[in-house]
Length: 446
Ligand SMILES: Nc1ncnc2c1ncn2[C@@H]1O[C@H](COP(=O)(O)OP(=O)(O)O)[C@@H](O)[C@H]1O
Ligand SMILES: [Mg+2]
Image (tube, rainbow, N blue to C red; front, side, top):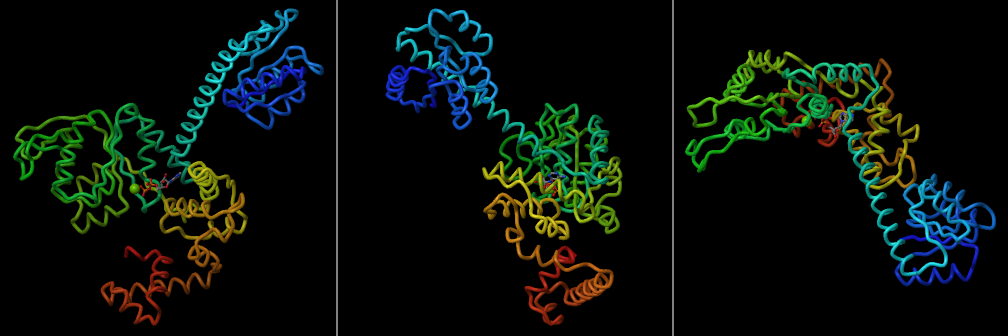
């Protein structure tokens, strides 16, 4: 509770100071207008008691200035009989209220309390708005590469339709973020958006979650349960890791996509629901199709509209804006202020190959912001493996050498059936450096 008393009469200020300090306020004083304006630059006052006649400038002028510099501060004008008109005019300029001297201190105190409450309310409301704005900003799909621009255009085009969308791309490229962007720009944006991670669930669990079940459908089904498809009716369902579901589930999903019909587990009735499906996977569905693990008809049904996100290393133009974006996101969360990267650190970030894509970049920057002492990220704030992988210059010849190494590691791993201890022995390197190379060449999955 910060209060500023602006009056040229010392004894009056001192008296008021005592009154309000006893009530628990932090009280500052100013003897004239300029001093008041200066003090308000250093401290955020909740309430200012401002005399209309001051030795240097008009109290009304001070009011205008304070209003500009600290919009949440509530100002109570104090006036003698001669200037009541001015005090009334000051209300139009945004003063909270005015009091005519000599006034009752009890009355003043009530007024100050009310003004203080209003100041706090305004400040809280502003802070909440600001937070909301920042949060929504951090959910945007950011980038300035040609690729990202095209993705954003596709999102704009497909969002208002009811079409099923398949989002593909390596892990961490922003598939879920794109799904949310489609949802937010769709006519269903006021209905729920539900994420189901298909790879995290057993088949029957996935099916019962999605389509529901009736009592007695399986042991433990003690009563009927609605599926998400019924619950989110007219909403949007995001099926993540769709490449990991069983053929049986694929059949049921296809049926739903084609007719909007589904049957709860154990039920003999079919029901209808209107849910928009957005699916995503980091797997190569065409390859899975060839292996007979993914139904062709489902693939074509999902693939009506495909959005494919490139790995981050293929769109390095996105890195600088993403860095800026994640720095402010982390700073916001961690209440720090790190606005940029040193040129050396930025070069490392741009040269690294980001096997974990945008998610990895985000995590690296969050860690860097935690470590960072000053106001910019330096090389030292970045993890060691990123630095060593990024600093080797990639001339044509060592690109080829690396390619040979990559192929050789792959072959050895095939020979050892993926046994890394054995592979490291054959290659004559430590297991640790094998892991390092696997990461470097993005071979972890293969
Ligand atoms: N283009 C982008 N702009 C801003 N944040 C992004 C972008 N791409 C990914 N992210 C962030 O990176 C993280 C991983 O994204 P996510 O959508 O979960 O990837 P995926 O589903 O492909 O694994 C999330 O925190 C997401 O907000
Ligand atoms: Mg994901």
